[in-house]
Amino acid sequence: MPSEPESGTENDTPFIHKFRTDKFHYIYDINSNRVFQVNRQVYELADRPDLRSPELICGHFPEFDADEASAAINELDEAAEKGWLSTHRPRTLAYRPGTTLQDMLDSSPYEQLILNVTESCNLRCSYCIYSGNYEGQRTHSDRVMTFDTAREALDRFMEQAIATVHISFYGGEPLSRFDLIEQVIEYTQRSYPDKKVHWTLTTNAVMMTERIAHYLMEQKVLLTVSLDGPQAVTDRHRKDASGHGVFTRVMRSLEMLRHADPKTYDETLQFSVVCAPPFDFEETERFFNEHELTRNHRYSFSYMNSTTENPELKPSNDNIERLNGELAVCRKHYLDGLIETGPDGEETIDFARSLYEKDFSDFYHRSKTPLGDEMYPNGCCIPGARRLFVSTDGCLHVCEKLDNVYPIGTVGTWVDSEKIERMYEEYLAMSRDCTSCWACRLCSLCFFNFIARGAFSAEHRASECRYVRRRWDRVLRDYFTLLEKDEHLFDHLAELRRT
Ligand code: SF4
Ligand code: SF4
Ligand code: SF4
Image (cartoon, rainbow, N blue to C red; front, side, top):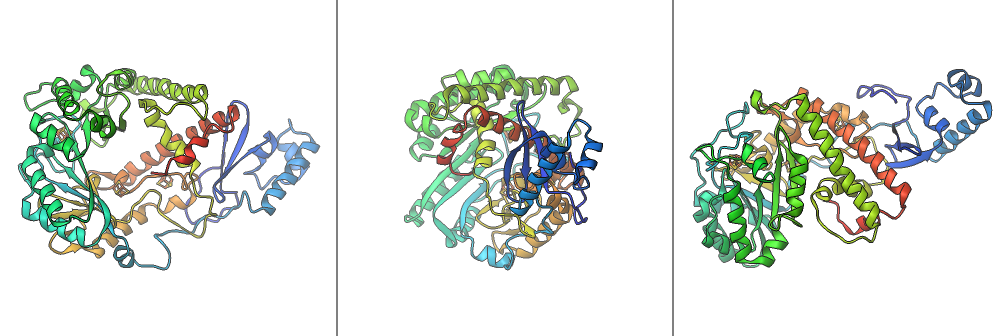
């Protein structure tokens, strides 16, 4: 394998990543964003430009004969003539060339407004980033958003918004401000009748009542309910202020919602699942796939934020080993299911599919435009464009995941492009090696992934990057193993839009 060179260094090694399945050898060519199946000789020689004569090759690889060596050299020369296996690497990371951040902000209408209606929460989940276990993060507080702040944010947002927008309620626990939520919905519908608004709300669901359930279903609010799995798994970390697990109450709330409008419930409700030590992944998968209130929904899955120093939240090596084993089983369920049903198989949403399909879909829909000298920074959004998060005191942030750091303006003064420039420069200064990273066209890491203890952290970034490269190496191996079995297996992904 080629070693990963430092950014900006001259490099005469093709910009490629090599991987193998059980049957074949492959080269992922980063410049063309294509994957080639090759024979063993080409595979070994692709990143050895120093070996370009049969004598040198046979001296280095005694198992190759001179004919094989010559054939491999020819193949590599032909690939080079077509522009493949190029040594080119981008020189810099940059947003769209030839434009300024201010121009981009001015030409990017808003699509989503996230209102942090309260910093208070009725629960005390152990892994909560507001628990006090995370340095640099805010803690639970009684601060709430006023209607005036919400209205001012909405009015500014709507001035520059597209016709169909998302308005989201976030917390703390947003249902503790149900009065404000109702006020905002009614004000928006009265003041902006021509806009189509999709309402979304992330909730622990414990404060649900019949009246709230009916209202939310009637307004078609897209709910994301936090639930980590069956009772033993959920109650381990998700507790109220008295230390009691909340599973039973969440399930009762789900019943209320389904009873209020079974169709909307089935079509729109999603679950946010946090995986935390000691990990019971198999149980979690079974629960979400089998329980009548949770099966066949969308699941967003994340790992507990690992930047805490709290020893109780640090997984042991045994925990991690067990999790990896259980994840491997889950992945196998998904891959076996794909092979069994084939490309025309019945579309079901199960937990494993939610976890693994997006990577395949992202890879399927990847751009084949050759890499230029400037590269867009991975999964980063343009801060301040399209989406805004408003904290309880009216500060603007990039999104709910950066709700406590790098403020980018206030509701009164609106978006401050200088603040965004400073944040962006700090991010870029830390990310120069992206231009020589083999995963640069697949990676979706963004500002949020590199925050630890309230600021960008090179150390945290390094561990995220290692994880991303390992994950994509595995995705590539899985993807091509499956294609070897059925070349049309991913045809159905053509229908899925890249998210
Ligand atoms: S429900 Fe959410 S905000 Fe409240 S304590 Fe749990 S993780 Fe934190
Ligand atoms: S998660 Fe990252 S890319 Fe997405 S909005 Fe937040 S900062 Fe931007
Ligand atoms: S993994 Fe992503 S963020 Fe990390 S160096 Fe590679 S492209 Fe950059």
